Length: 203
Image 1 (cartoon, rainbow, N blue to C red):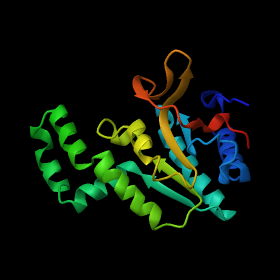
Image 2: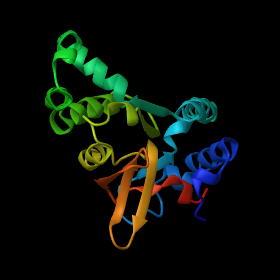
Image 3: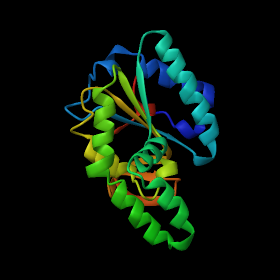
Image 4: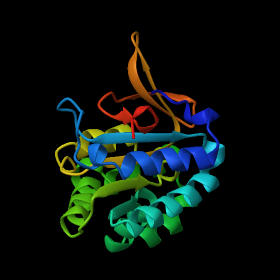
């Protein structure tokens, strides 16, 4: 049954997400037709605060029944990586002097999805005991980290367990343009078709 998340109240979304994620079908990656177990949880950007609360409640409730969640916030991870490389202070000091394109270029160089971010996520995955991976902080790392780029590069790293990407925008499929992740409901250039909309999944 396809559900339009935008029309569901938060409590209904919570119940749907809990029912799907706690189900054996989801946990055992059944019915995916050889696709990677990636799921998009879209929401309106203006609902970000409510969604953060929902995520926390979801993690708590799932862990109460023994389903372990590894949550990776891309923004927090980016800050951590910048500090680890010794670049954080330099970025803070020089940000005001740089144009936005130059700042974006610097951040994309240091936080290369392929060469820095994915290896960092792979390390976290390797060092954790978990059943489901939650990826959050997508809106906060735009435009220097793009979600479709993360998902494309993550396919070989995170295929053992289901991954849920909490996405402030829409995930649309059309025959003409395929599937796209439209961040903030405005940016329509991120083509990604291998994930499932979690609101279209059966519990």
